[in-house]
Length: 263
Image (cartoon, rainbow, N blue to C red; front, side, top):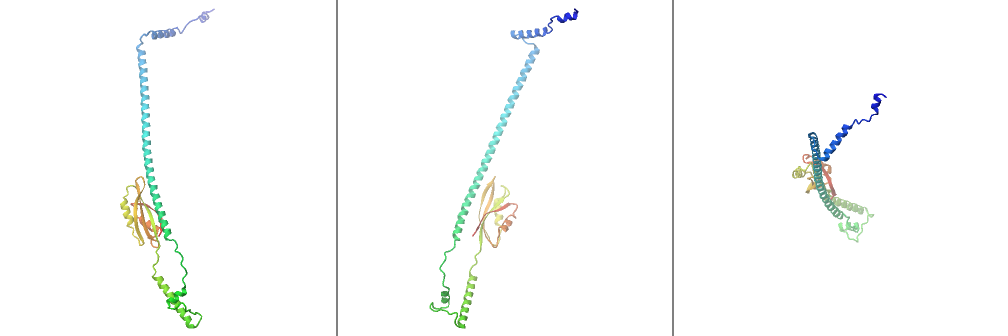
């Protein structure tokens, strides 16, 4: 047997130094033997790392809480804005409802005033002719008699036509009129509504008469001018009225017809 083969069969503990070192550390820790400076420095670094990690976690938690509080405050402010807008819209709806009720009542009054008059009994034309000529009811006109009687009947007929034409010429002509409610909207909430109303009323046309007006809130601090006017249908049309008002483009954004009623 060679020397290498004999050495290979020997049982040698090559890692004994490592196990000895581990055993020494164990007993030192058990018996409370102080650590070396290198070990103390390592433990101090570990403690600093743990403290830094804890402070980072605390700062992250604080920042998260602050962001949550900011989000909540922003949500509360937005809810307040929504509630304010909702209240303004409710006011506008109430105003429109009251205006609609007023218009319905006015329409009912107009319909009652325009109801057809009861029919009267037919008038005997013959009696009117006889009264006009001073003829008694018992005296009859014979249209198929002599030529003189025919001429007399023609003369009476011509006089009646002449009188009817004169009465018709003296009778006043019925002028068709309409009541219009206009919505005049400004550009923004900084528009001078008093100046806007003066500009609207400065429009003067033949057959145009301005009436009452008021400011109606629309929303976000903006108000529109609601003004009433009476026009003669043959002289003033809605297109001409809108063109005249929208000429004041520094104050007027648009003009809408809110209501249109015949008088």
